[in-house]
Image 1 (cartoon, rainbow, N blue to C red):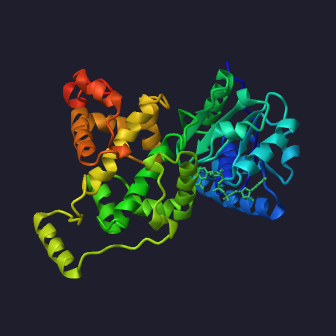
Image 2: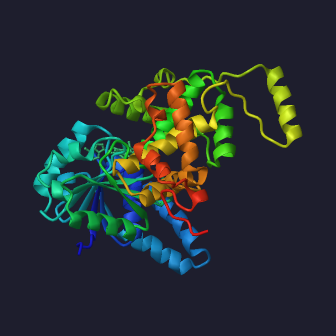
Image 3: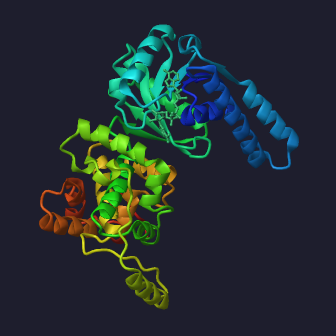
Length: 407
Ligand SMILES: NC(=O)c1ccc[n+]([C@@H]2O[C@H](COP(=O)([O-])OP(=O)(O)OC[C@H]3O[C@@H](n4cnc5c(N)ncnc54)[C@H](O)[C@@H]3O)[C@@H](O)[C@H]2O)c1
């Protein structure tokens, strides 16, 4: 039985910290939000106040009294501080959301470790750093984990709960219960670079930038292809802009440094320059293609003759990567699917999508690409996929793939 978390200290009042503090206060927790100076916390408080009013309007509609109570209750539960050490004195949970720098995070946790009560659980909201490396700065690894929220926190439903080998079952359950009390869908994940969503998302968006870099297709056509061909709500190039090219570069550079042999983590020269130059074909060709496309009732995209063209070039490695996550025991199939549905807004998770596409089809594509492009790691066939097909599990069409289907 996990102990209920009531008092929460959030360190960092930026984009993520303010969002986490807001949702915690809205859901009945006593929250202390900490930043380095008064200006930062005041700015965050103002942002939170405006955001709570928007939430109340949506939640309560014409019920003015209900909305007023929700707003005043939430705000009364939210305190601020510029003294992190003092602010953890009665915390059940500390969620850190400060700058993405390992040494700065370790220094903070080492100080907090001495000040916080022994029962206090520590969690980092890091997107790209190792939870184990951060937890190393403390003497409470059994009460340490990752709580990876998504931006904007009040809107995004997903919470990745990350365990390191030392995280106790009780700590893990407390973090999950708290996540649920925050109104989030929680998924469990081991401490692997990018956890579930970013581990799949960043290499995918990077490959989209490489397609552009190689001149294989234009930015617009890459986005159109993934939206219309894969049913994604946003194309990978616009998604990269949304995430921030500097953020993607920071993450990929860090992973490349730690795992230099992993091709998926290779930095892109185009991203290095932070220049996205669209390689367009001539206006005349485009016009002709568009006319033809319209006549066919289709949206036309242009692409050079490269493996998988646009959609499958991005799609197949993403599906294979998700199967490798499963194979390595990083997360369950249900959690990988939930992570991509709730974290990325996809209609289907990659494991169920693999079943839908057909596991035999994926094997065929992977084997053909491995033959034509030997040594490309992201095309390699995951043994788990091969095993499923050898056992006659082809996915939805055969009644069983990674999941079982009744019809
Ligand atoms: N931005 C995202 O989309 C996103 C999503 C998930 C996770 N994250 C992670 O969340 C963390 C915070 O990201 P963000 O986008 O909110 O950053 P941000 O720059 O908006 O906010 C960071 C805040 O931390 C404060 N800070 C820095 N050092 C501090 C210290 N020692 N004590 C107290 N406050 C300190 C800064 O003044 C700033 O207000 C990072 O680890 C990031 O990787 C970010």
